Image (cartoon, rainbow, N blue to C red; front, side, top):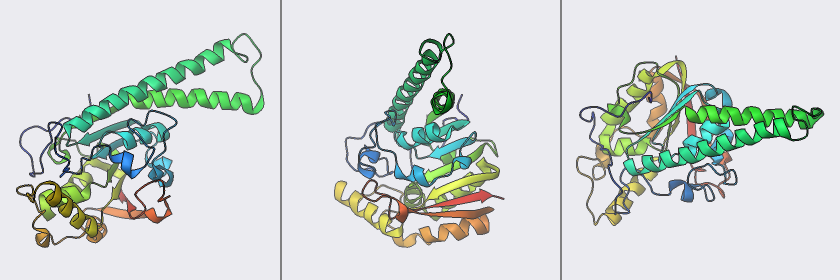
Length: 304
């Protein structure tokens, strides 16, 4: 079973769990339909097709943060980025959680596709080893050719194993019951704004506390905070798309009541939650023509 079970009981903070496909185009939890289609043109659903464009953020992340690690991805959407992480860095386990049931169902479909592709690729590599030139009954290929074939077989097997230990969960991470120190790496990319808008300063503090508790000593927390201008843009979009109606018990119409700002998160995490910043990855180094993340940055923290 998945390391993070679906939440039991009531919500800790009222930012809800989306339980069906909304007919509205207003995604008040950041649960955008086809999110990666517009953020990274060419990066379509599933991430299972080798021809699809890679999310540019993968190029600035380090393998050691994920390889053979127990990972959690918060706000996974339909799983495109999550599956790319798993396949590229060969995680030991990956649990991904999202509030939107519809998106989680899509993510599960994408996982099945990716797993089937990995099994097929592994079988193809094994078939080559046994029946094609260089197989068991013929002379083994020499030099680079033999090394490349061996590497492809190994990578195919590792991808198959990592995907078999990947789970997508529908729920609120704040309400999930997780043992302390369950994860070696937690990613929260472009989700802190939505927690903050729905739950206020108390909600974002609760989230950071939850991350601290779930991380093992030495574990990494990778945060991609959205800027304050993005908060204002989200409020404007909700007002336009929702006929002026704002989510109840949220801060969409009360931004002035939020005392914390995204630029405060770094000092907050270091000063109050026992995390230490070890890397700041500037989004300006990304190819802005291929992905809409160039105006953001990734903060990498380690748990002391």
